[in-house]
Structure formats: C-alpha cells, structure tokens
Amino acid sequence: MKLYILNGPNLGRLGTRQPEIYGAMTFAELEQACKVEAEKFGFDAEFKQTDDEATLIKWLHEAADAAAPVIMNPAAFTHYSYAVRDAAAQLTAPFIEVHLSNPAAREEFRQHSVTAPVSIGVVAGFGLNSYLLAISAMREYLNNVKR
Ligand code: DQA
Figure: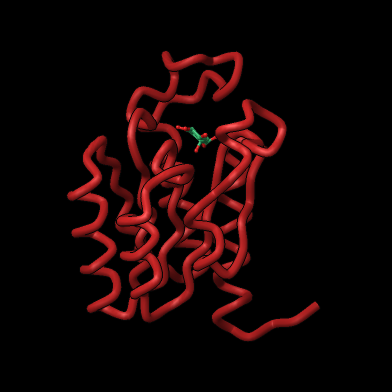
C-alpha cells in the first residue's frame, strides 16, 4: 500500500538548518530511515519535500485520488495555510501530522496548527522518531488496533 510522507518548506535543509532545534540528521537520512520503517510496516513510501505550497497541495490531491494514507510535516504552513488544510481535509484515507520539534513549546505563532484539526492525530517533539512513531501508528490505525 502506498503511503505519502510529505514535507513542507525548509525541511530539505535538515542537517544544516538550526541543528540545535532540528538535529544534525540530514534530509536524505530522514528519507532513508522513513523508507526502511515504512517497508517494515508494509508501506511503499512516497517521500517528498517542497518549499512550494501549490506543489504540496497537488500531492495532497494525488493522495486523495489514490485513497492513500498521508503522514505530513507541513512545516511553517502548519500555522497559517488554510489552502493546505483544505487540501488535507479532502483526503480519503487517514492523515497524521508530524513535527520534529514540539511547536507547542516554542514561539507563540507556532502554538496553533490549522492543519491538525483535519488529522487523526499529531506526533511532535521526537525528531526522526516523530516520523517513525507516525508510521507505526498509521499501520495500527489502518489495522483498526485499539489499545
Ligand atoms: C516544524 C515546526 C514548524 O513550526 C516549523 O515552521 C518547521 C518545522 C517541525 O518539524 O518541528 O519548519 O514543522
């Protein structure tokens, strides 16, 4: 089963971008770790990043049409993009929001997510593990495992 793992603006610069906040891991390393984990859980991951809102929306439309589940780090779009939220609201399979940092513990403008209300849940604050936890949570959610 296809799993879209979508990343918004500035995440392609992981490794050099504010390592004190986002860690030393590069974007390529994040991609590799997510693909391995996704495969372990029976997903074929489409791992993508864009700095462009229109491109992110186009991928969400694609995922909606394919009825594919989505894990997305909307990055700064999280906090203000009603267009990304409206696209995520059209998804036809579950959407989990992820963040490397914990936006709730940061600047005030990061403390509100306009996209989280259309997700089934949010994993934030665990760096790479936010993504890995989201992948296993997606599998359990799709298998309808309740604990
Ligand atoms: C982020 C948090 C956002 O506030 C920020 O704009 C990002 C990254 C995270 O993964 O911690 O670009 O989504």
